Length: 55
Image 1 (cartoon, one colour):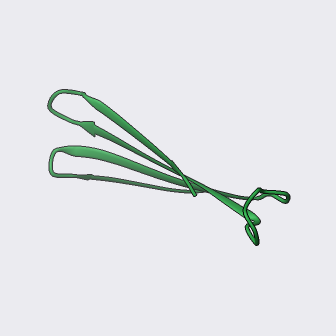
Image 2: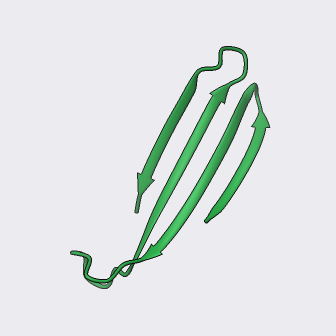
């Protein structure tokens, strides 16, 4: 697991990357799964955006 945090342009950003080895996936030659989570918070309003991607 890897996690980075940055504050810029009036936003607080957190990015998290997780990788796992999984056998028996329905894709040929694929043995690894990634999850990327990006979380942004606008500092002025407190509005939160969450984006989750699987690869």
